[in-house]
Length: 252
Image 1 (cartoon, rainbow, N blue to C red):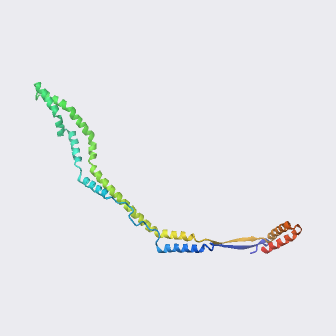
Image 2: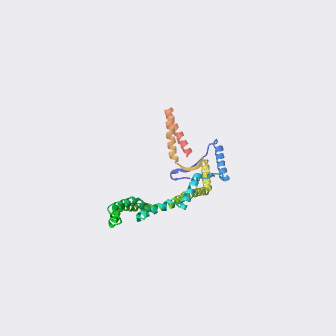
Image 3: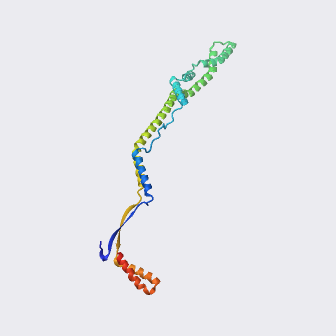
């Protein structure tokens, strides 16, 4: 194609490819990639169980805890009852603990000849009041703990349930991961296949237009020819310039 100024444009196409010694290996690798993709023997999920189950000891312990929690501990109502009796002053053990004080007051009243009198009753009340007050205050302090203690069986049962729920959740997540993996197998196999064959596509073709100016090429060739000839034979530099200019014109 001609341009103004007598120039011309031509397209140079360069084609590159893998060296000859590499072609058999590349063809073999691409064939193996195709075989892997079409055979369906790509990635596989671990076939075994991916969650560790309960050991026999743990299973037995959970079962026993559950049975005890369902049956209920007799210590809980007994403890609550004792605290309630201390709070209301009806604990028979408290009465037994007060007997030495009662006997001492009665003995003193008998010596004074006031046994069974109002004096004896007042003295007995004064002697027993501190003990009853102390037991009542302790019961008030212990009441919140006794109330929470009543939920001990339920809390233990909840712990057993939480342990089993955690195990079930782990097994469910393992099944979900396996399912998701199987869903991605075809796409992953194709991606692996494409990645493998892309590694074997060595080479390519490229085209690039090159513009040549005849006059400029002739001048460049004449200058180069003159310099080359002049370096060997200064008297013949003109002949070198003529030959270089002709070569430049022919190359255009």
